[in-house]
Length: 115
Length: 115
Image 1 (cartoon, one colour):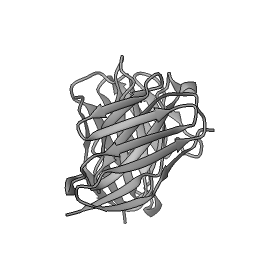
Image 2 (image 1 turned 90 degrees about the vertical axis):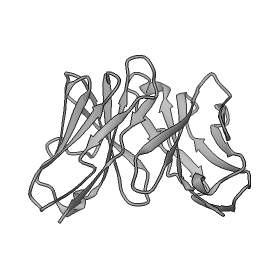
Image 3 (image 1 turned 90 degrees about the horizontal axis):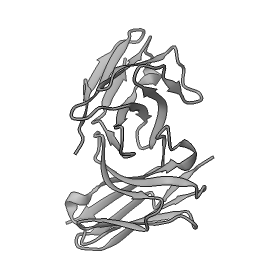
Image 4 (image 1 turned 120 degrees about the horizontal axis):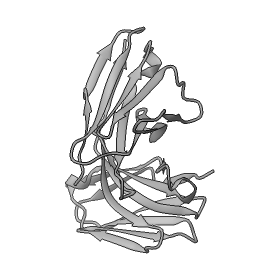
């Protein structure tokens, strides 16, 4: 059974700092991995999607990496801003459910960027 | 990008009544829609997967007769919480997947409070 873990659960940094959020998964047979952002009381916004054949994806100040063999992904946020404050969720799309599209979510990392 | 809407965004109902939540894909046809629930400070838990024109597939532990899902068209899925109880109070989020891409697009969520 696929399990997704995110560390740390919460993170507080001063504005301008570069930071890394971690996601680990127990079964390396994945189809893809997505990083989402969730603001309080809101839905999810997709940030980056990495296919199993890819090693990283970049969008603006965000860079996500994927190491399938070790079961890890990281989300790197450069030059953090107060507007980056949110909960970041990692979700894995297992190869065994590639037809169904089922995502398994981590518990999330709640980020606070202080001005 | 693809847009998914939910209606209502929040609802308060009395215990014992039923509530219907709509999920619509606004600019693409969603062959598959997913329903999640999220308790405070917790991650998303998949409740069921629905494919247009067929019965929904429920996750283990989710009561089919309590959470009725209908996916009557390629742009609309509904979740009806029947005979709601206070423990059903939660944040319900839907997502939709198109024909080609495997990326899921999430709705803004519906906050259900049962009094």
